[in-house]
Length: 143
Image (cartoon, rainbow, N blue to C red; front, side, top):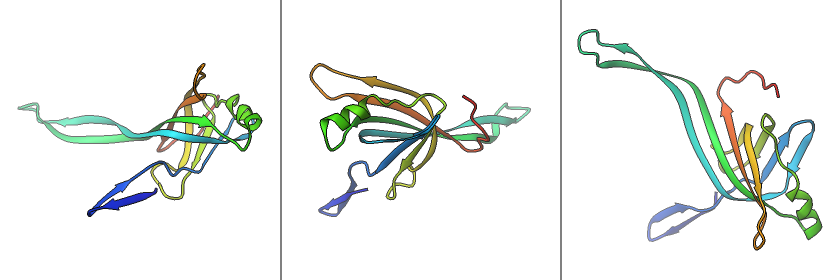
């Protein structure tokens, strides 16, 4: 990730992901720029250990860890015709989605597409919103 420093304060700036590819019936490289990349982690929690007298929680068990990424991207290319070709591609729920990023190990990885949408405007660029999820112990995806 690009960083800058001013008067002793370090700031991480921008999104350093360099590649987006998804696999449904075929591997599809997607030439896009990301404008937003929101990453969240989650897990199932069970407070199964309770004090029998007070009912206070004595222990927590976390399982089924997941990481979710919400991307906002727009198509880009070296010509208008090629950018238009990127604008008609859209991943489908259940597709595997790979983010390549050598600077951000948190973002890089293989995810499952949960949903994707495209927005086109009269005055403005086409944009896609893509929600991806990575499951800790996922064995198979059937779509």
